[in-house]
Image 1 (cartoon, one colour):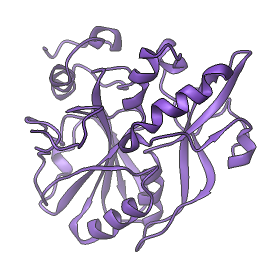
Image 2 (cartoon, rainbow, N blue to C red; image 1 turned 180 degrees about the vertical axis):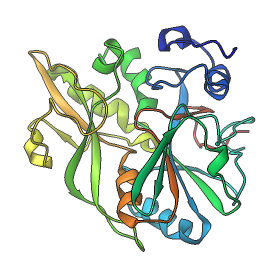
Image 3 (cartoon, rainbow, N blue to C red; image 1 turned 60 degrees about the horizontal axis):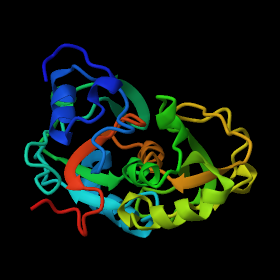
Image 4 (cartoon, one colour; image 1 turned 135 degrees about the horizontal axis):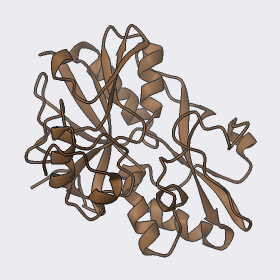
Length: 272
């Protein structure tokens, strides 16, 4: 890969290493849905060591939106259990930097804000199981249309830990009614990527007022004969971190994931 700008379509079929290289060089800054098929995609929470244990407790208590797949050593930008050459400061297409509970920057590199006490927590992402849905003939609308998955705040309470708590964020995918059960069974096989859906049908049941107005990502059409299906979402910890008002924390921008070298269907998320 070179620093020449590349598009999402240019990276379809590229390896995880090549996608990360394009991101690291600044050639690609877009969303990662549909890229590096078969590889685990990860949400990120980067936070000071003195609150990392509470955050890990929070993830353990809320495994659907926060399936823990990797943790760095303090101050180390590498994640060797997820990839041989990962540098978390540059290998995500877009980051969000929060200070004292306020979003202060959205950047493509966090080298300038990196600190020796920061711990990276990697969480599974629903982008991971989308390849399995597509392989089984189940349409994934946002990939079909080149958009980011729609994400919504819900009214589902989380189990708190220390300063961390709030409500779950969910993703929505329109699924043909006759394939909803199949989609449920396929995604259930990926507990480290949010697993089975948490709801199907009426958005009001989980506190969503308008599917045409996602809180993050892009709206997608629901065709006749389809049902909206909702999965727990890794943007959840962004809200949780925001509410905690930490002096500094960093996340991925919604839809802009870390792509690991670990296979999406690996028995564990430890790269060997």
